[in-house]
Amino acid sequence: MKINSVRSLPARAVGALVACVTAGAILGSPAVGRAETTPWATTEGGRMRIVALPPEPDGTVRGALQIEPRPGWITYWKEPGDAGIPPQMVFSKASGATLSHVSYPVPKRIANGKLNDIGYDHPVALPFELKVEDPGKPLNLGASAFVGLCRNICIPFQAEFSLALAPVKGTPVEEAMIINQAASKLPEAPSDDFAVTHYAMTQGRETLNLKLKLPEETAAPPQVIVTGPQGHVLFDGANGHQDGDSYSLDMPVGKLPKNYDIKGKRWGILVIAGNRAMETSLAFE
Image (tube, rainbow, N blue to C red; front, side, top):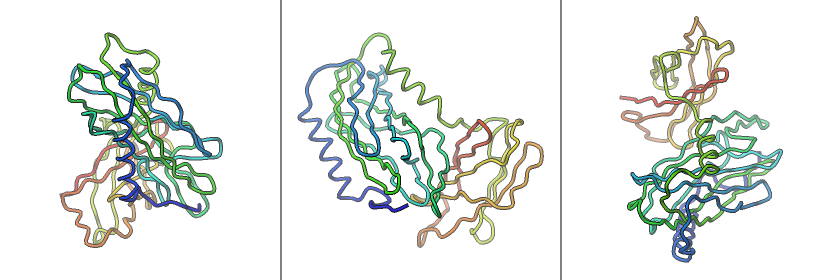
C-alpha cells in the first residue's frame, strides 16, 4: 500500500486540530439541543459523523464517531498495523469537556500485498466518553476527528463538528441505539473461560510467550494481536499448540525503540477466538 501521509498525526497537525476545535467552540451557535447527530462529513473514500447523548448527572457524555468507508476502502484500528493512520479525536477545552477514553470494536487483519493492516472494511462506530464540569448546563462543544481512509493510497481525512447538548429527562432513543450498538461490538473483558493465563518475555526479550484459556467451542487457532509501544504491533505467532481449552504460542517481539525499558510498562492484547474476542493488558514488572 502506498502511504502519502504520516504514521501518526504530526505536531503541527495536532496544533491545527486544536486550533480548529477552539475556533468551533468560540464561533459555534449557542443553541441548546438534547442529543446531537452531526451532519456527515464526506471525502473521496467515505464519510464520518459524531453522535452524542446529553450529559448524565455525573457529568458523563457518551458518544460515538461513526466512520463509513466506501466499498473497497478501509479505515484503521487504534494500531493500524504495518502502515496507516490511527483515528484521533480532539474536543475543545474551552467547553469544559475532557475526553475520558475512546473504545474500538473488534478489527480484522487485512492483507494488502506484503503489508498487513488492522482495521475495518465496513462501517464502524468508535464509542467514546467525555466528562463535563457542570452537567446541569447546556454544552456547546467543538470537536475534530482525524482518520485514514485507504484503498490503493491512504487519504488523511479531517473534519470539524459542532455539538449542542443539554440535560433532559429520559434517553433520546435513536442516538442511544447507535451508541449501544457500537458498544455491543467491543471486545469482552477477561473471564473464567477466556483469558490470558501466563505471559513472559523469553530469549533475551526477543520473544513473548503466551498461554491462553479459550472458550470451549473454539476449534481454529485464535488470532492474537499485541500492542506495545506506540506504533509497535505483534501479530505473527509461532509454535502454536492447543491442549483442550489451553493454547500457547510465541510471538517475536521485533525491534523495539532504542533504549526502550519494558519494566513498568503495559502492553495491550486482543484475542479473537471464533465469534468471541477478549481484550486486556499485560503488565511487565
